[in-house]
Amino acid sequence: MSTNNYRISEEEKQFAIAHLARTGEEFINSIRNINEKQWYMRPGPGQWSAAECADHLLQTELYFFMPTIQKMLAEPADPDRRSETQGKDEVSYQSMENRTFKIKGQPWEESSETVIDKAALIEGFSAKRKEIIEWLRQSDDELRVHYTSFPGLETIDVYQFILMISGHTTRHTGQINDIKELEFFQQAVSA
Image (cartoon, rainbow, N blue to C red; front, side):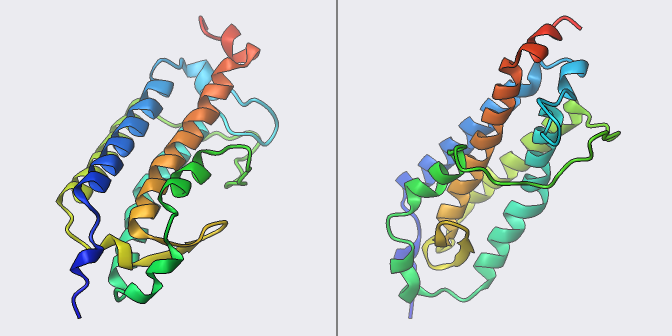
């Protein structure tokens, strides 16, 4: 039985591509002019610096998103589960963007000596984001009938997972922008 009608529409594809491109640019712009001292400043004990937020985004792009998509697509298509994902497109990225719901990530050491090269990070993130966008642009996979489970959303399809990638970027860009608004960070602008 063919499931050809479970491909995303051209409008859905263009929305996701534009969203991925926009959120990627917003992230890069949020870190581009941060100086070396500001890059490693933490807003408080156990909280991430801009460098750590940025590194988390890069690592997630490199090692989580495409492998998860590939794993989802490797599973047999299951059109019978389609009703489990109905109406979750918008909420899939909005749930990641919503920072009122805290998600505890990997803790960083209090006195981390990890050096995070900002220029290399921007280059690596840009390359990986372009790869994801190009894959989506070329894809004719049936993204609506392959699934994963995600906390709070339960079952989502590949398209919704792609939208979550964008929402994840917005989430941590917001976190970086919040750090940049803090007084101690502002005082280090000329450092």
